[in-house]
Image (cartoon, rainbow, N blue to C red; front, side, top):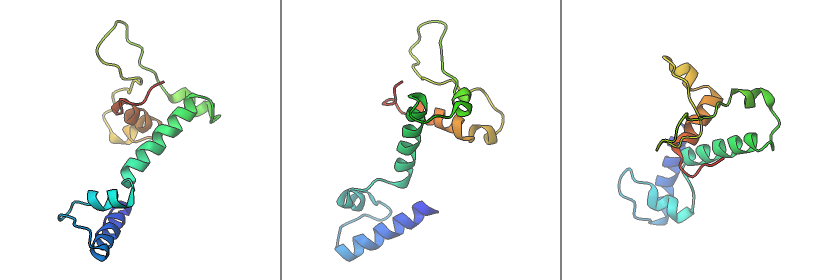
Length: 112
């Protein structure tokens, strides 16, 4: 819902500033204002939090014990840094630490 507010603002700003913007494409307006989408900001904040947690800049031993690293038994092409256990419910997969590990696994720029 917050993303919708940002899109409406960008649409209004494009109209007022005469920035050509195809329907439902807010990228030209975002580039004009040098802003990121809220989803991108959330992902970068999550990755920053996880890297600070792993580098001990944030002292939270309880959260750190929930992080499970992927240690393959042999060399494989898969290089995801975290192991996410199987779950039959989305409730577990959307828990904060599991979500952070999933985001870090999808970003190739994240490194330990």
